Image (cartoon, rainbow, N blue to C red; front, side, top):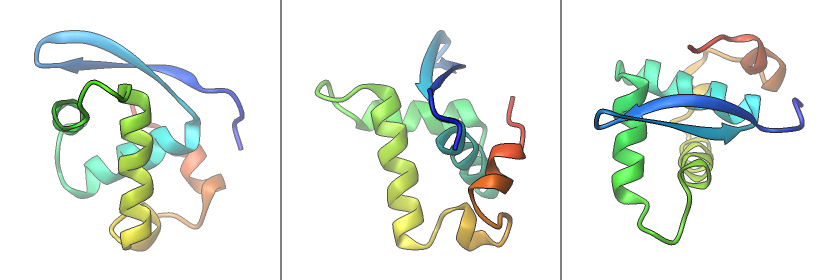
Length: 93
């Protein structure tokens, strides 16, 4: 596990922002976007639009990733990763 969250830049509807996520969550998020053949920023913008005002974007992305993994639609179940060690090595810029 990577421990501390790292800042990652996103552009949502033309505005630059950043989210602090642990490597494992960031990599899983990137892999979900790739599996859906969607730009990362577009997926983040969709999550941002649905999250409401009570939750930060980083928390909303973590919950999105968690729900995908729980429903079997996440990276582990797509056959691209063998676990957190593999996810942490995958780059997503």
